Image (cartoon, rainbow, N blue to C red; front, side, top):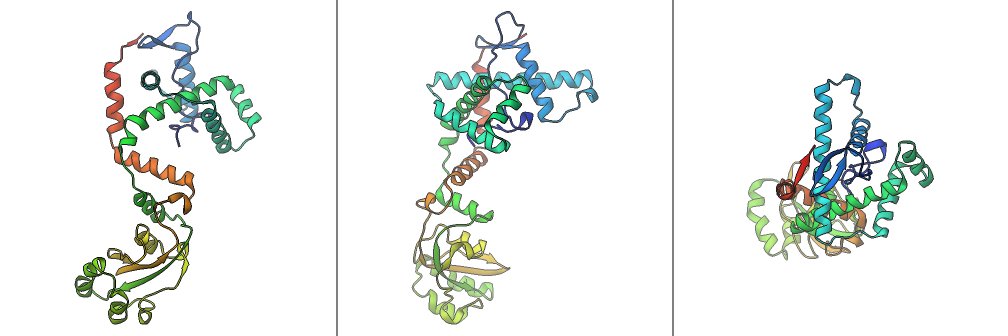
Length: 310
């Protein structure tokens, strides 16, 4: 998740690298604060885009081809700006980070390491070139994280709620009790008071609930959280023992749930969820909250850059 659009081009590669490795005699497509993007390098990335997007170049008009080439050059310019800024801010990438991302890429490609790099070589890309590509992508992502995304707070409760609402299974056990209200009148009468003080939950469940186990105060008995309905899982995700949820919809009925006991909480998500999934959801929710803030940040750097397109 750290690398932006990494497994795209060539069926296993993603966002284009940032800097040209061309010789000084190669023709220049653009310079960014003095750093060169060669015409050969641009053409290589143009070919990557054609492969990744499955474009039939023969069906494109000359103006469409030129438009695509300009778009790719603009992307390379932006990536160059971001990489330069990352280095200026002292952001560094270790060999361990690079190797970890390579292993992720190989796993996603579904081939052995030797085959992965053999496929790259057939298309004219060396292992060193790919490592430099990985490094620049990590630099770019870390820059965006530092200056934009890390300033956006995503709570554990938000992560857990998203996970459960999208079918995720939580580890651990819980004993919950529910009240299913027969109408809005009963809900209006009891719901808010139960959130403030849950002591009477069992008695009220026995009195008015039309849901299961009403005669037992609505208590289910201890069971795996993953066996509860997604709606109930979501409702109790951020609750501690003794707390009552807000009213939620369960099969079209007003419902409230109380946590009688729970062997986990959202305080340490790594105990109840795969840590990698936690990171993925956190980054995704940050991007949602970021809106156009990433674009604004990139544009602010671009305005300060000295760009010369040949």
